[in-house]
Length: 134
Image (cartoon, rainbow, N blue to C red; front, side):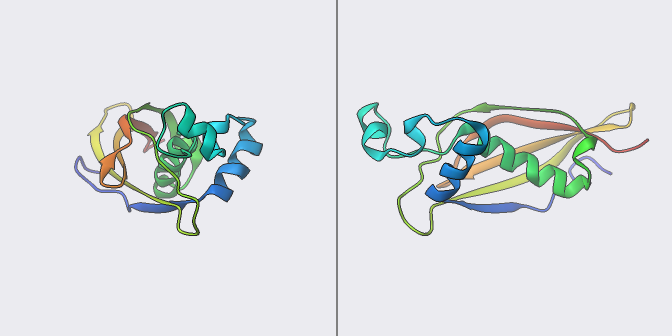
């Protein structure tokens, strides 16, 4: 594993039906994630995806790459911009890329993750630390 190595990207169409399923799994029934009228009343452009769903999708890219979710030893992000999910069949396209930013002597590596929606970054300081050896 080398610094600068790129992970296979991941593109995900996030749809409103996925938001409802995620709400049920996470027990996060905040109406900003399913009620357009409410979302607009509180100043949002429309219904938005759960931040933790976006975060989880970034983790999926990393776990697909390392092959074992148990090898992810640390993961963190900052939520910088919402993913607005329209009420249509296509939903919102979120694109994830990743690159090895550091290989450490302790057998771990830091992966720097970029998540973009509508050409803009939606996760800041998104980084995972993965165990690469033994």
